[in-house]
Amino acid sequence: MMQKIVIKMQPKCGKCRTKAMMAAAKALGVNSVELQGENKNQMVVTGDGVDAAALTSSVRKKVKNASLEMVQEM
Image (cartoon, rainbow, N blue to C red; front, top):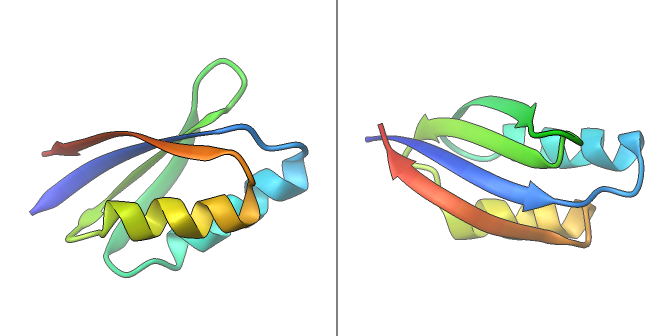
């Protein structure tokens, strides 16, 4: 089942944002990763069978302040 996962994060710099996107892209089942929002502070991940909690945890390791906002089936 395809999912749309939104993670809100507050990266300190552009390099931290890039590291978080790379960590999300490496997760099992992820098809695409994109940044949205005014300050590019929301990461939208789409994929098939992605574990949202594990994904948020891996992003939190790169960007200290990250929270799971929404998980939606597509």
